[in-house]
Image (cartoon, rainbow, N blue to C red; front, side, top):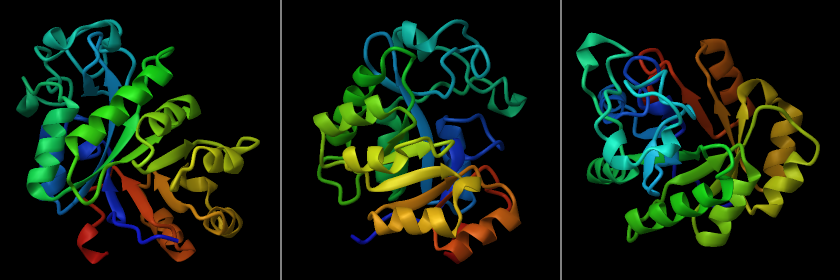
Length: 246
């Protein structure tokens, strides 16, 4: 198994629930708590620019309405993506992948990009995100880890930029999960933490995969995963878990 270049502790959507998710403000807060790796969700604007957002629609986390992927970046960039969280973050804008890349590279941070397509744009999003990641991290020793629940998005990313590391996200162990990850030439499996036990960790590691978990917010769950020998823990509790003790 090749050396794993990423930190074990990963801040979910930048700073978990302590800041507006998937914004640069969240990344800064996560970094202030000692985190050096961040998970974020990336989709495409109507004009093809990769930007950070989890939901298909704008309503929960911005001042906008409707499907985010149907709006051009010029309009998306004007939205308030902070007020929904708290007054202190009012006016915080949506983040483009390019801005996040610059922030991470300038500070020596690592990134897990979850490819989060607008429904129906799985292949297009996988291709565009992989191409953008390859361009933005060109010349850097450690590229971002690309993950997705959508095999079609990962396959498109593999076809576009096969050198970038990929991970299959799993919320259940559906039939053929291991074979699919092998076919996609993934380097990691990123599971709901409850799916990992001694048997599944053995299966994954015997097949050459690294084992990552989401979203781990309790001490007992983290201890169990550490005892199992897993490789990465994605958490909202950046104020509780200290990544310094890796």
